[in-house]
Length: 375
Image (cartoon, rainbow, N blue to C red; front, side, top):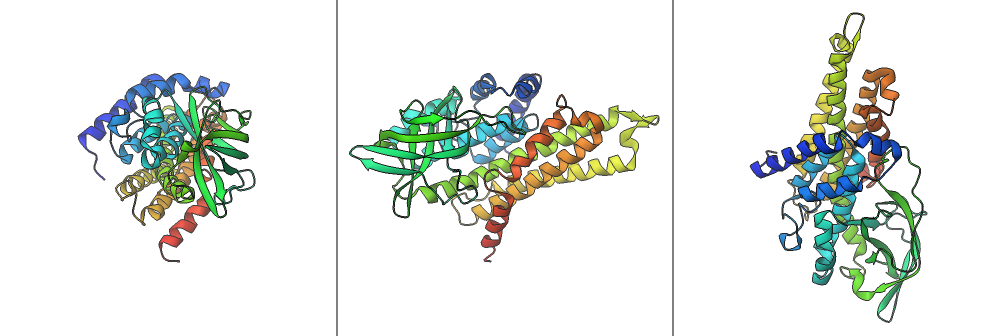
């Protein structure tokens, strides 16, 4: 899929920012497991979190592919920063733009579009996991307020100082799931301590708890009882974005390993002169390119069409598998240095596995693909 001149200019601007602002410092953030709020805000100044949002709310009104191009560039250096934006946009601000009321959009979208605020999405529950339809969190309408009780786990950006709100899924009646916005600081809403994770050290991930948490009934997002259908559509968008992040990791591994193969010498010659290394790099480059081509092709599919869910599942399945394969091979090419956190490939290796799990496991993606084939 060819890019427009506007998309190319945006892609190059993000690439320059990544190389000048993120690459020099992100290793230190990663080592400290510190959320890089300042970098997120600067990406907001660049227009990344608002690129798909309507112009009347501070966005650029561009398409999802343009956003994915930015995620790919960022993920070449750090996928934790990329997933912070992915989760806030595809599951948060996009949901508000698609299903929110005019008052909700005016209240929250400008800060989200500017990068000053983040939106978390509370779907996964301790007893649910992959079964996204199993929602134990309950919301009962009491006069003019929803009273919410339940718990969510593995929530991206739940506890940052930038987080403005979390959108939670809750049962609001028999066989009825709805989505409700809970602003930060609402009494009864508690954020747990950050998880100790294998990777994604620059992304904030926490459990949240809702104990008689009261919010105005106007905080309902979309129609009551339509929450399940809403978040299925948002998850499909999120899977496309995860595919872009995966493609970024895959290409980042190629770039790092190629330079290492040229620079490192063994037995009197660069290791890239050995056929085993050159063939490995050839396979890595091929995989990265196919991942990129597939997600960009899927970005051209109508996201409201019945075909999109299956297409997005294919992009996510393939690209996340490629990311894991390329990270493993890049680590092998780096040898012992690939096991040191000071190297970018080591961080990619730690970060990539979650891409086969988050936004629906790859087993779920195969299920969705098979279903789209009529099976």
